[in-house]
Each structure stands twice: as structure tokens, then as C-alpha cells.
Length: 380
Image (cartoon, rainbow, N blue to C red; front, side, top):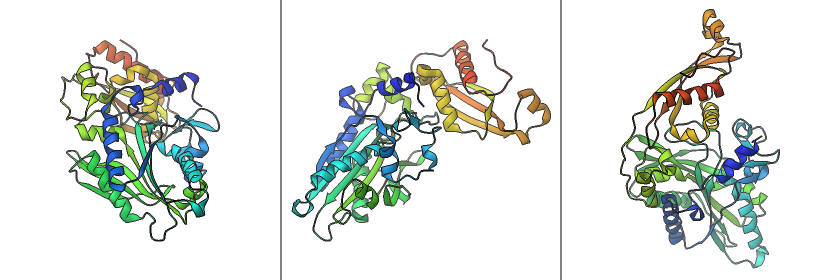
């Protein structure tokens, strides 16, 4: 379970997609996207900003996740109580949003056609690796178009889904090349992953599909009259691609040279960058090594100082059976553990980093993630 401090810190984190928290380029991108979709479809738009604390039922059960799905594990999800958690995706807001639409759709025989775009932006909370593209609290938006009609042949289908992808790409990354590949989600059918071409190769931008009938029915919507399109997109990555930013930390930077550039969607103008400082750590962990769990542990250990980390990566991981006896003895390694070479790359966005400070951060990380009986690093 989350500690009271961790929960408070999560709930106090600024939501860059919310104008109530101050202006940010992310809001301009989202506004343009909603305008493009509603303009093309002529539908009603409902922007819903729901609280980050959600029921486990809405985050998983009502979206069709199986009881044994790995994603439910406390190692990856952030539980505040047995039945309450910090949402792991903005899709957690979809079941209550659909329930509200279901109320609008009654009584069924007398209802006029309904065509509504549900937009649910906000922060999500995950245990994730640390690198230039990932953070523990990314921004997402779920876009669900719901149509309710008594007329035959008006259900939303795969052609509508491809139109939605075209509109989204056109609004977010005008002129970008894109492709799709099959993807599975418990709350959609005919699921797709949408990738866009960048200077560094193809990169995932969104996932989408047709709203699954059991999810509609579970919210009180009649699948014989109601159909839907569902698309989820990472807003951090969308803004980075739109502006040409290569480090996700820049989106939250307080450096005036950076922060002023986060007020619009004009191309990113690089500011002077500090040289990276690398520190390698030989640690013992319970195997197998997991980059996401290690990244989350490092982020938690450093707290505000985690902003100085450009990346945390596993260079090598060696199981107990693959190490010579002398190495096992030196490390105090147990059969259920492995030896990991962990690389920290430190590069503050603003200011400089001394060797002494880099070593202090290294030692904080070592103390937080090393699970062996012998301490091989000491601050100096």
C-alpha cells in the first residue's frame, strides 16, 4: 500500500493538462485535438477531469481485466487501500462516464440519437523505468466517441476508427507518417497500436479500438443501440513529438529558459545542456531484475532529486548460477538473487553537478536498491 506521504505527493503533483494548474503547451495540443474531432463529427464534447483516486473496479474489473492479470500486481499498481488505487490509466474514468451517458439514453424507445465525445485527460500513476521518455506519473487522455441510435446501419465501425486515427494524427502531428499494428485491450475489439515516424524511428503514439460490447453493457448501455470508438494517447509524448523535445523532464522544468517555451506549440529551441555524469553500481537484487521496479525504487529514494536523473538502465544482470563461487561469496549472493550492473546517468536540466554531489546521489540509490549483506560503495 502507498504510504501517506507517497499518496500526498502524488495528489499534489501538478497536472499539466489542466488549465486550473497554470498554462501549458499540453493544453493547447489537447484543445486543438478536441476541436478537430468535434468539427469533423459534429458531436457534443464532454471534457471530464476525474479524481486520480479511483475504485479498483473501475480501473480494472469494469474494463474487462481478468482477476489474474499481471498489471494488477502491487509491484506495478499503486494501491491506497484494498479497493482504492491511484489510477494506472485514464481509462479508469470511462466506466463512470459511460454510466452517465446511459442515464441520458433512457427511456430507450423515446430517445433522440446521441453522439458524444468523452475526453478524459489527466495524470496516471505507474511504476516505470527512468529514461528520456518515461516518468512515474505520465499524462494521458482517453477519447471515447459514443453513438446511441435506433436507426439501423449507423453503428460505429472500423472505417470510423481509421477516420479517427487520421484526425488525431492530423491535429497532433500534421503531416506525420503513421502506421497501425494489431493490439489487444480488454475493453476494445479490433484493437490497434498507432505508431508515427520520427527522426529516431517509429514511435508509439496511441492505442485504439472499437468499444467492447461487455464494457458498454456493464455501464447500462444497450450494445444493440450503442457503439463506440476508444482511443488512448500519452500526452507527454505527443507534446514532445510536436515540439521536437527529446527529454520528458523538460515538460516540468522551472528553468525560465525552458518554462517559457512550454507555453506554446512552437518548435523547441535547445538551451545550454550540462554534460552527463555517469555512475555504475554493482548491486544485489531479488531476481529477475526488473527495470520498471528498479526505476520506481530509484525515483522514490531520490524524491525531488530524481529530476537530476536522465536515465537508469540495467547494463548487465547475472544469475546466481552464472557467477563463479568467489563472486557469490564476495557479494553474499543467495540462490534467489542476481547481480545487476546498474547505470545512472545524471544530467540536471539547470545548474551544474559536482562529483561530490553525484557520488551522494549514487550512494542514496545504492542504499535504496541493494539487497545484499555487504556494502561495496561508500560516500567519498
